Length: 275
Image (cartoon, rainbow, N blue to C red):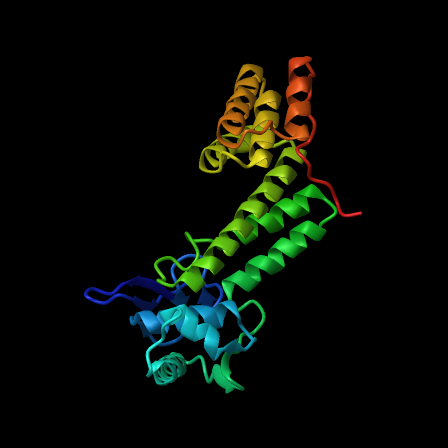
């Protein structure tokens, strides 16, 4: 297996073997490729092409998409030939790493073949699906935490392409959604003392996500920190009114009223088994 470190003087990545386990291709952090031999992907164009082929694993990526990702609306006259050169270089690198013939030309595009679980993003989604199908919160929590452990930073860190950045935003949003699901399961399990610190950090990072605030108020109230729970509501209400001209949603308002009324036990934040 391998890790990715910056290559001095080059705008790309150097992938070197490491004695570790996990998916063979990684996009949940720095772009990494794991094989028996080192894989070096330093050129920007190769990074962008490989990223898009991985994100669309087992599906054809049209040549037009690659051209747009690399040059936008004004590709050079040699753009198609340059993409072919990138793909040829990637094929050689993957084959040298012992990963076989992965990239094939299909119609007017290219496809990278991936086995189940070979890409960390696919493994993440499979674990998320398992967690959301779980009928017990402890099973959901285990699957969600295993999925979140696959992350090593922002997805595809440092890849310079507007098309790739759109994927980065979408994938990062998925992680936040799974964090919310996981914390709901943990609150359902009564782990409010264990997660209150983590939720506090998340509300700072995502101040307009009401679900995190709901979870924070729930955890604080269950920890006996009623004053802090009410302060969290006042802070988010002020932010919503000042920045959006809106009141918080019904769930937050209802929880606020419950705490004001002296409810001894805040309700669960929302985890429920599938119907």
